[in-house]
Length: 313
Ligand code: MLT
Image 1 (tube, rainbow, N blue to C red):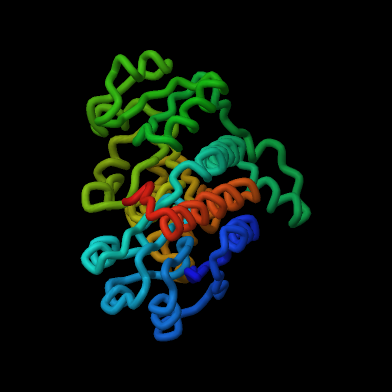
Image 2 (cartoon, helix red, strand yellow):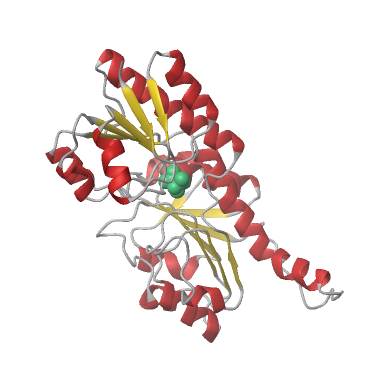
């Protein structure tokens, strides 16, 4: 009987799928260090989310382990080249949390535009100030979308439904395709940034996207613009963003993802003004977690029982 280690909290639907497929489930979220290494070696496959950091040392001696499925999109917590070198295939579930991530982006956008978190906190502290929290309409405003993949497209579609003008930046989407969807395109960030009222990023974190938005880029934006990052920490330079917010050279930011997670106490964003923070909640809905659990479990069941590989990264 094949054995699967569940190394993170996984919705029951995924565990039930594996059990029904006749796979032994070793459900031990939260394992670390040597215990995690031993559990990986003893399993034919592993399912995780973003919690365990599967660095190269976990693949030095992978034992029986031949596959890792990430219940989610980003595989930045897994050393994929190290796994590949040892014959361990890494797969992800890119579709399951698209809608949730897009909705969370829009939630942050509206929370910023209407200053909802600060108004809520003020009221709960006994205040009632209708003049202090004058917001801005989003209709007629311009949203810059960097990365028109699954999530970027869903965000752009929702923004259009709110009568926003959308400018997209994605090397894989032609101006003709964007126009068909009702969007404009920009050739590069320098062209896009001065035009946008809101900027949202939907690209993976990599060498080419690390600090994609830094002090120089923030300096190109309008003082009234707001930045959203529901993609990955580090795509926006945190120190530069905090400095721009403190200086008032941009108007606000909504951030769900951080360079270090859980966020560290000296992260400059914690003290920045006009910022709405959430603790990596983009995919945290019942629906998304069920979707990705089922998709990851199906990937592993198909791999172990039929020798199929899908969504390899
Ligand atoms: C993802 O990569 O799927 C999302 O950021 C959510 C998560 O990390 O669980």
